[in-house]
Image 1 (cartoon, rainbow, N blue to C red):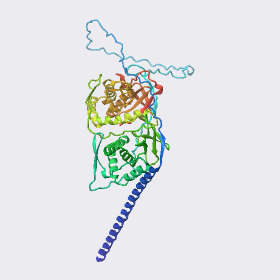
Image 2: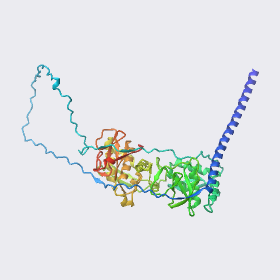
Image 3: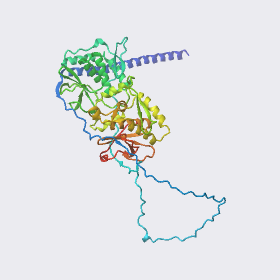
Image 4: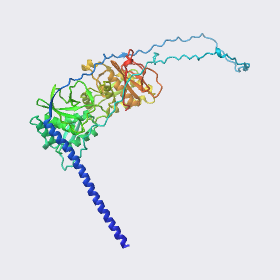
Length: 541
């Protein structure tokens, strides 16, 4: 027994020694990985700072690309209900009522005699059966249905946001120093030590390189960690994240070159493509975008198109320093950003045909301010993608909570067609139409939230709002339908619905036109250029 106990103790000792060795080896491996990560990032920043000190080149700006001129927008039309022919009632003279007999006489059925079949000689038979005449399908107003196979704009794909070249490790500090700034109506705290402020005496490459080294010494890693965490927790799209970094940097430094430098460093370290440039005594940051941005100057460096942030200079001195793993920003918004709770005044929107569809609307003021900053853009130079970007942006929770409970209550128990008809008439008749040129002095598309906020809207704004409501409230597939000078919508119903339709991937989408005032589902505005129609496929939710 003693021998077994001794053997067990020796075995336990060996296991303990093995565990200790394993922990030491693991800690050594982890520290080595951490060192390699730190060495890699430190080396990347050192190379960037060195290149920033030397490699600069003068570039002339490319002329801004204007938004493609669209056909003259079509004014709204009033739908006239078809007048059905009146039929005079049949008037019968007064007659004495006839009382039927209580007992009906029994009627014997007549049995026809058996007949010999008539055989038609083969040579006299018709070679082909005569086809039965099929009546053409008609719309709700009795007009023939128009079915269009349009050019199809594919669904926009949302890709993951850029990330740092290596994960940013949080450093635990005993007494971190916090800095508070405001963005989208939120007060936000980040770890930002004041003693590490950079100072730019001039904009020489050497000065900027030294500032980059100072920012990259590790003291700002917790700030970068906090910014990336805010991006994730507040659902900030790439454009919102850039604006947040600007708000932070300006709150810390004021409207200075140091603020631009801090913003650029944070943006670069977060994984985004950017370049530093100078215009006279002003430091400028350029950013890469997956989208063509209209009405903005741009610069082309080594095949990459770069857009100056808050600058419209015709020439810039641009650094050729690149950071590994950099990626272009996307302007798609697939999540509602977290903002402050300041709300606009309530707005009452009423359907004329269905007065029970009487809704109070209220939107978040910080969102309206944010949408005002959004650049007009398109993917692959296709302006149709612009409408999809606006239409796929979700409504805020607050806007939904204001609108949707009453909508769902009024639509309860109705068919898809009846529900869609009421939503359509609410948009058609509850909103006031005005051309963008008349209100804004030029083309201006609205996110759905903006159409609920501003007093006037045009055809694309109505179609975008309508498409958002139908997808959210009814869960149906919707496409926008573009004709030169006009934008409508079309819905793919699960039930049989007749009317004008467009064919998207083999499915009939019934046209719903929010600018054909009073028109029912399935009736498209007349005189559209069907040969040039495009269907813009939208994200369902």
